[in-house]
Amino acid sequence: MRVLAVFAHPDDMEVHCGGTVRKLTRDGHEVLEIVLSRGDNGGRAEVREREARRGAEILGVEEVIFLDHEDGRITVDPESVDALREYLRSYRPDLIFTHSPRDTHQDHRRTYRLVTAAVSKFPEVSVLMGEGPSTTPDFSPVLYVDVSDVIEEKLEALRAHESQIQRGAISEDHVLRASRYWGARIGAEHAEAFEAFRLREGLLLR
Ligand SMILES: [Zn+2]
Picture 1 (cartoon, rainbow, N blue to C red):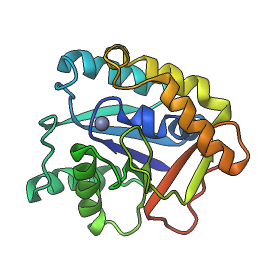
Picture 2: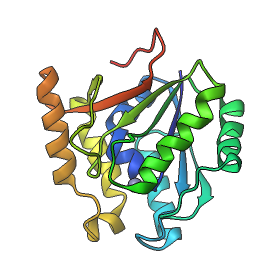
Picture 3: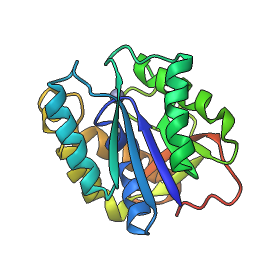
Protein backbone atom coordinates (compact mmCIF):
# COMPACT_ATOMS: atom_id res chain seq x y z
CA MET A 1 0.00 0.00 0.00
CA ARG A 2 1.14 3.56 -0.68
CA VAL A 3 0.31 6.07 1.98
CA LEU A 4 0.51 9.85 1.98
CA ALA A 5 0.45 11.98 5.12
CA VAL A 6 -0.57 15.58 4.38
CA PHE A 7 -0.34 17.90 7.35
CA ALA A 8 -0.10 21.64 7.98
CA HIS A 9 3.00 21.80 10.18
CA PRO A 10 6.23 19.85 10.71
CA ASP A 11 5.11 18.02 13.90
CA ASP A 12 1.49 17.22 12.98
CA MET A 13 1.99 13.79 11.44
CA GLU A 14 3.77 12.49 14.54
CA VAL A 15 1.00 13.72 16.86
CA HIS A 16 -2.00 12.72 14.74
CA CYS A 17 -0.95 9.36 13.33
CA GLY A 18 2.67 8.61 14.27
CA GLY A 19 1.86 5.20 15.72
CA THR A 20 -0.23 4.10 12.77
CA VAL A 21 2.42 5.32 10.33
CA ARG A 22 5.07 3.33 12.18
CA LYS A 23 2.93 0.19 12.06
CA LEU A 24 2.41 0.65 8.33
CA THR A 25 6.10 1.17 7.52
CA ARG A 26 7.03 -1.77 9.75
CA ASP A 27 4.67 -3.92 7.70
CA GLY A 28 6.42 -2.85 4.50
CA HIS A 29 4.01 -0.15 3.31
CA GLU A 30 5.48 2.99 1.78
CA VAL A 31 4.70 6.31 3.47
CA LEU A 32 5.45 9.75 2.09
CA GLU A 33 4.89 12.96 4.09
CA ILE A 34 3.85 16.32 2.70
CA VAL A 35 4.17 19.26 5.10
CA LEU A 36 2.36 22.31 3.80
CA SER A 37 4.19 24.97 5.82
CA ARG A 38 7.59 24.99 7.48
CA GLY A 39 6.01 26.14 10.72
CA ASP A 40 8.09 29.29 11.12
CA ASN A 41 5.52 30.88 13.45
CA GLY A 42 6.63 28.28 15.99
CA GLY A 43 10.39 28.44 15.45
CA ARG A 44 13.07 28.79 12.80
CA ALA A 45 12.05 27.10 9.57
CA GLU A 46 15.36 25.27 9.14
CA VAL A 47 15.18 23.87 12.67
CA ARG A 48 11.62 22.71 12.17
CA GLU A 49 12.45 21.17 8.82
CA ARG A 50 15.31 19.22 10.37
CA GLU A 51 13.09 18.05 13.23
CA ALA A 52 10.44 16.90 10.75
CA ARG A 53 12.97 14.87 8.78
CA ARG A 54 14.24 13.25 11.97
CA GLY A 55 10.71 12.44 13.19
CA ALA A 56 9.84 10.95 9.81
CA GLU A 57 13.02 8.88 9.79
CA ILE A 58 12.17 7.39 13.20
CA LEU A 59 8.75 6.39 11.85
CA GLY A 60 10.22 4.83 8.69
CA VAL A 61 8.79 7.46 6.33
CA GLU A 62 10.51 7.42 2.92
CA GLU A 63 10.52 11.10 2.14
CA VAL A 64 9.34 14.46 3.48
CA ILE A 65 8.25 17.11 1.00
CA PHE A 66 7.74 20.70 2.09
CA LEU A 67 5.32 22.86 0.15
CA ASP A 68 5.65 26.58 0.48
CA HIS A 69 2.51 27.64 2.25
CA GLU A 70 2.87 30.44 4.75
CA ASP A 71 2.51 29.29 8.35
CA GLY A 72 -0.83 30.53 9.69
CA ARG A 73 -2.04 31.32 6.18
CA ILE A 74 -2.34 28.02 4.38
CA THR A 75 -4.27 28.74 1.22
CA VAL A 76 -7.00 26.72 -0.45
CA ASP A 77 -7.05 28.09 -3.97
CA PRO A 78 -7.06 26.37 -7.38
CA GLU A 79 -3.25 26.61 -7.63
CA SER A 80 -2.74 24.88 -4.25
CA VAL A 81 -5.24 22.18 -5.14
CA ASP A 82 -3.48 21.60 -8.47
CA ALA A 83 -0.08 21.45 -6.76
CA LEU A 84 -1.31 18.74 -4.40
CA ARG A 85 -2.98 16.89 -7.27
CA GLU A 86 0.38 16.73 -9.03
CA TYR A 87 1.72 14.68 -6.11
CA LEU A 88 -1.36 12.48 -6.10
CA ARG A 89 -0.95 11.89 -9.80
CA SER A 90 2.70 10.88 -9.51
CA TYR A 91 2.58 9.04 -6.17
CA ARG A 92 -0.84 7.36 -6.55
CA PRO A 93 -1.57 6.81 -2.84
CA ASP A 94 -4.12 4.27 -1.63
CA LEU A 95 -4.58 6.13 1.63
CA ILE A 96 -4.14 9.70 2.85
CA PHE A 97 -3.89 10.84 6.45
CA THR A 98 -4.72 14.46 7.19
CA HIS A 99 -6.41 16.84 9.65
CA SER A 100 -10.00 16.73 10.79
CA PRO A 101 -12.29 19.66 9.92
CA ARG A 102 -13.28 19.55 13.60
CA ASP A 103 -10.21 21.44 14.72
CA THR A 104 -9.81 24.92 16.22
CA HIS A 105 -6.61 25.57 14.23
CA GLN A 106 -7.45 27.35 10.98
CA ASP A 107 -4.43 25.92 9.14
CA HIS A 108 -5.59 22.42 10.07
CA ARG A 109 -9.11 23.07 8.78
CA ARG A 110 -7.76 24.55 5.58
CA THR A 111 -5.49 21.53 5.11
CA TYR A 112 -8.55 19.30 5.36
CA ARG A 113 -10.30 21.42 2.72
CA LEU A 114 -7.28 21.34 0.44
CA VAL A 115 -6.92 17.55 0.67
CA THR A 116 -10.60 16.83 0.19
CA ALA A 117 -10.72 19.19 -2.79
CA ALA A 118 -7.66 17.51 -4.32
CA VAL A 119 -9.01 13.96 -3.94
CA SER A 120 -12.22 14.74 -5.80
CA LYS A 121 -10.34 13.62 -8.91
CA PHE A 122 -8.97 10.50 -7.22
CA PRO A 123 -11.99 8.43 -6.19
CA GLU A 124 -9.88 5.37 -5.34
CA VAL A 125 -8.03 6.92 -2.40
CA SER A 126 -9.21 6.54 1.21
CA VAL A 127 -8.91 9.63 3.43
CA LEU A 128 -8.61 9.40 7.21
CA MET A 129 -8.38 12.29 9.67
CA GLY A 130 -6.48 12.05 12.92
CA GLU A 131 -6.84 13.61 16.36
CA GLY A 132 -4.56 16.14 18.07
CA PRO A 133 -4.52 18.78 20.81
CA SER A 134 -6.60 21.27 18.79
CA THR A 135 -9.32 18.91 17.53
CA THR A 136 -12.69 19.69 19.08
CA PRO A 137 -14.88 17.50 21.31
CA ASP A 138 -17.18 16.68 18.38
CA PHE A 139 -14.35 14.73 16.68
CA SER A 140 -16.14 11.50 15.72
CA PRO A 141 -13.82 8.59 15.02
CA VAL A 142 -14.98 5.60 13.00
CA LEU A 143 -11.71 3.69 13.06
CA TYR A 144 -9.18 2.87 15.78
CA VAL A 145 -5.67 1.51 15.42
CA ASP A 146 -4.01 -0.28 18.34
CA VAL A 147 -0.60 1.41 18.65
CA SER A 148 0.42 -0.15 21.98
CA ASP A 149 3.48 -1.88 20.53
CA VAL A 150 4.77 1.22 18.75
CA ILE A 151 3.97 3.86 21.36
CA GLU A 152 7.66 4.22 22.29
CA GLU A 153 8.53 4.96 18.66
CA LYS A 154 5.71 7.47 18.45
CA LEU A 155 7.09 9.23 21.54
CA GLU A 156 10.62 9.12 20.16
CA ALA A 157 9.44 10.73 16.91
CA LEU A 158 7.60 13.35 18.97
CA ARG A 159 10.80 14.09 20.90
CA ALA A 160 12.52 14.84 17.59
CA HIS A 161 10.48 18.07 17.67
CA GLU A 162 12.47 19.41 20.55
CA SER A 163 11.76 23.07 19.72
CA GLN A 164 8.03 22.41 19.99
CA ILE A 165 8.27 20.49 23.24
CA GLN A 166 10.31 23.34 24.70
CA ARG A 167 7.71 25.94 23.82
CA GLY A 168 4.89 23.71 25.07
CA ALA A 169 3.20 23.29 21.68
CA ILE A 170 3.23 19.50 21.96
CA SER A 171 3.74 17.19 24.90
CA GLU A 172 4.22 13.52 25.59
CA ASP A 173 1.61 13.84 28.30
CA HIS A 174 -1.08 14.93 25.91
CA VAL A 175 -0.21 12.22 23.42
CA LEU A 176 -0.28 9.54 26.09
CA ARG A 177 -3.53 10.78 27.60
CA ALA A 178 -5.13 10.73 24.17
CA SER A 179 -3.79 7.31 23.18
CA ARG A 180 -4.99 5.79 26.47
CA TYR A 181 -8.38 7.42 26.04
CA TRP A 182 -8.84 6.02 22.51
CA GLY A 183 -7.28 2.73 23.56
CA ALA A 184 -9.94 2.27 26.23
CA ARG A 185 -12.58 2.25 23.50
CA ILE A 186 -11.13 -0.86 21.87
CA GLY A 187 -9.63 -2.61 24.88
CA ALA A 188 -6.05 -1.68 24.00
CA GLU A 189 -3.51 0.18 26.09
CA HIS A 190 -2.88 2.80 23.39
CA ALA A 191 -4.77 3.60 20.20
CA GLU A 192 -5.04 6.31 17.56
CA ALA A 193 -8.50 7.33 16.38
CA PHE A 194 -9.56 8.41 12.91
CA GLU A 195 -12.51 10.01 11.25
CA ALA A 196 -13.07 9.11 7.62
CA PHE A 197 -13.81 11.41 4.72
CA ARG A 198 -13.73 8.41 2.45
CA LEU A 199 -13.07 4.78 3.28
CA ARG A 200 -12.56 2.43 0.34
CA GLU A 201 -13.63 -1.15 0.67
CA GLY A 202 -10.70 -3.40 1.43
CA LEU A 203 -8.64 -0.86 3.39
CA LEU A 204 -6.99 -2.89 6.10
CA LEU A 205 -5.43 -1.28 9.15
CA ARG A 206 -4.57 -3.61 11.95
ZN1 LIG B 1 -0.36 21.87 13.15
